[in-house]
Image (tube, rainbow, N blue to C red; front, top):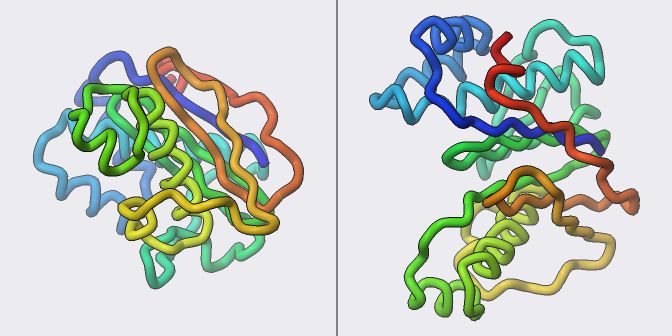
Length: 198
């Protein structure tokens, strides 16, 4: 299991955005272009660029293969069923995971949340604890492909054989990975936006 993260501290230039769009598979490019506000395209564009980089670094792939979607929306590579990946992005950061078995990743910027939401959804007292709970739930839902319904109920205990690990990314963010692998993730490879687009 390997993880890559990029911190996004500036907007994309028009040229960088055009270059990233040109490298995406057609169906993902069309989806990105449906995001009307250019500044909101940055995270998904960088997520797919980071995935492309990770696949090149790990497997030597020069292009993203076709991406399919399972019934609940989990992406996968139909032509490469033993290569599992997962993406997450939040304002200012992206996290990508690769493994030889299903995994789920999530990254969230710690930001203001109403005390009512903190209590109702997570039963905790701080925003950091709220996002830790959210990251655990979302990574687990993404690993299993069960959809976002799992996020709204009470947080459940890990199932037998299920593992969750928090990972270090960037100051002000909470990130984690869910897997059935006994091996904890190694150190996250961290990049800046400039590293990613050079």
